[in-house]
Length: 141
Image 1 (tube, one colour):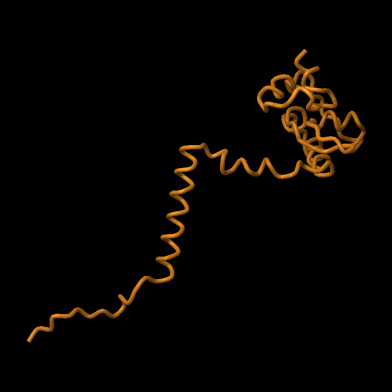
Image 2: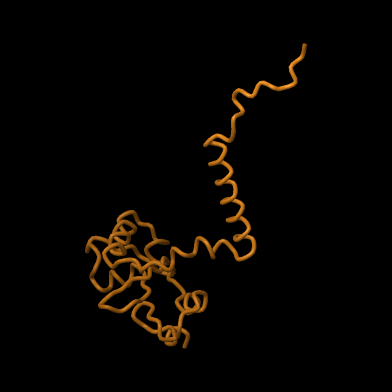
């Protein structure tokens, strides 16, 4: 009269989509747990450990900031570069003073200048680290 079994068509196991969603869900949960316990800088801060910005890249970004009169980017953004074989932190104004930027670019920073002593403290740089060609120790003095 009545059959005791169910029709199992379409229920023959997990589909590939289901497996991918489960794996993606686990990855998201792990990232959230690590972010909550160690901070998201632990995960996304790894980008900072990559080699510093090349001098040419910094020059190009400064030329763009200067041409578009982006004073905050030009005057306040401190870039980590390697110049003359020495790693240092510079602003576009410093690169302009070294005649490395297009001569037609000269945004006036005026009072808009970076606080290098605070930068050294915030980044926990050694006193021997160079910022704008001067050591952090000299900036703090």
